[in-house]
Image 1 (cartoon, rainbow, N blue to C red):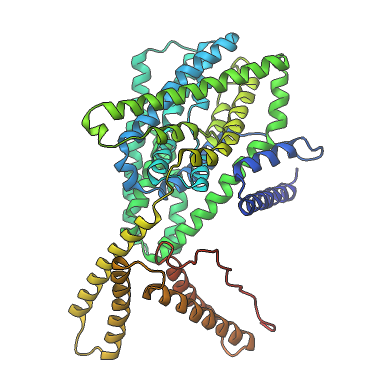
Image 2: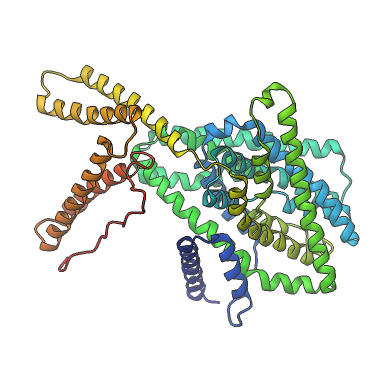
Length: 542
């Protein structure tokens, strides 16, 4: 295939990914599931190029930016508040899965050996950050559950990959529990140290960068610096990326300018959207080759089905048993754990959301070529990914059956209002201290008026909540003004009365205020029904 043809297929691949994701979003379907289905169908169409998994490309090329994007957008303070649950789940579920699924695999595939069985179990042990985040955001879980799930999926990759490395080594040499524990400790300590170091260095550089472009460019290489730096020190590259992402995401408001934060957020959302959805389409497009490889293993159809069922049952039993055991411990154990008020309803939902994805896909191809039944193990891993994705479709009715509360938007709104009132009060106090005799009174009055309007609206809403508060009226009327300002600028551009540089500069100011207005408060800037987006059509002659 020539370079031009390769680029053409890549463009087509991205277009299909965007189209299918858009259709899923519009129809409120599961995007990952639909992408896997479309990719699986495409894999059997004659004439399409075969897709081969390059495990190093997935592991070293795609995984670091995906993990970093997810970690940097995770609320570090919430993860820290639930650190006991997150740490126990991220390590414990992997250990339980490796033991249970490893023994089950050795039982149904005795010819592969115990070491290879445990290696396969390590492959399917970690939940996928991308898939879990996509599922959790789609069904509206309580914030506490979402935080635990995202924290677990971010950290369990490191434990699973360390277990995989130990199992692969056990295929060729004798390992002791002490050597396994030492490798795990080195991976955790090395990954954590490198992650913190990379995060700290990047914050120092970001604080000194003058432009958002340089800041964003530096952000794109950060996950690779953390990953390869940790791997060079025999630490966990996955853990280093997660730690660096959490650290930088938490420090971002302090070390970055508003422009840099906005630019990086948009860029990472775009990268994350394309990569994570492309991965699921990529998984589906491997179906034909994986099925063909599994067929060469010599198992009959009923034997393959039985093996798949046993592996899936073991996977589910291991996760449910461990999570509910931990839930019981948190309810009857030391007071530190009892105070966290773990509910069995939440434990059930956490148990069900055990979606596997890109890490499992990449890790199964890390199995050595001499691994017995390697192609069939790849097929089993694919089945696990697809079935767990399909299983996520049962979550919405389960949430309704359990009557789990959605995120408390009203509580978040009250907290926003309270904090905003404190911020406005600090701003007014600083204004009074900074005013000099050289400042014109009309400028000072305007600043006082804007701050007072917000403060008065917040106070009024806290005392008597109503939908017609001053702040909502301001947002509604200001949106109309922004629309008129945008239209006037576009018409002036069409008439050719101003240079393009002047037009773009004005549009940037208008856009910045529109973005600020849209994100000014949770739910305050949007009506209950979805608004029609502003139509940016160029007038005739523009």
